[in-house]
Image 1: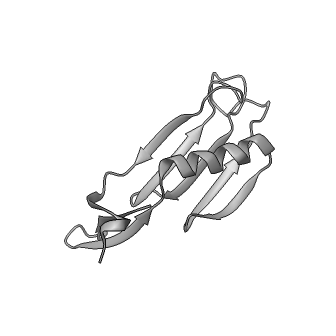
Image 2: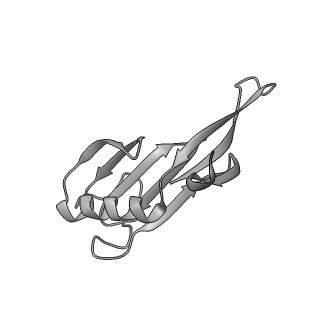
Image 3: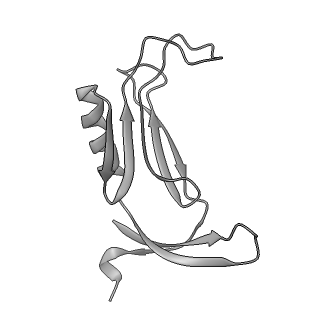
Length: 115
């Protein structure tokens, strides 16, 4: 785990707060998501202190898509703060495609170096 500082912009754009948060290791998230994927059952809850969910693959294609199925997906975090997602868009046996939204992180500090 790593402690990071993020900038959260107020809705009016005039004020920004800087807040420390703890980010789990990506390898730990991947291992957790892959366990859920192996079970193949819908799941939602808290993982590593963040809201998370997993949705298994469906044989029906997504609306307005050229895909022939709806891929399994996993996501954790809060968009605009810190968010990580995995999508098995190449099929449930393939490695997932990852997306990381960490654009508001302004400083990182390993957990072990804190006082």
